[in-house]
Amino acid sequence: MKQKWPLVRIVFVAVLAAVVCVVTFYRFPLLGSKVHFANAMCLLSGLLMGPLAGGLAAGLGSGLYDALFGGYDFIQCAITFVSKFAMAWVCGKIAFAADKNGENHAWNIVASVAGAWTYVALYMLKTYLYQRFVYGYPADAVWATVLSKFPASAINAVAAMVAAPIL
Image (tube, rainbow, N blue to C red):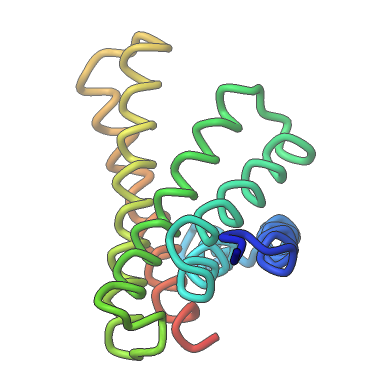
């Protein structure tokens, strides 16, 4: 009987989660934002391991960073886990669709674009919900905050879309 999750696959998930966590430390300023390649590593997790394993690696690595080094509470770490998991899951789902197994370069680019914009959409949604319903800010102030965060998120998304298929 063949195992669905052999030890090697579990170790690869753990190693990719560690890589995602460590890469989150490295950032550089660009156009008033800070670009980091953690999102590229999350996309790469989906491209290499498929939707479930890649999603777990991305979510666990990013959630671990938030928990240990980001100073966030459990809810924030859970939100990070879900959004990064979704990013890698969408990427892996597209890259592994129709028996492509992440080996079709054109589909990997499409998968990276879809995964990166999935994360941007979820991040913008989280920003809106927190600002509006947790902090209770008026709608116009919330939209101003969301719109002010969009350029930095777009820069990170584009950087991840370019880097992940190359890696």
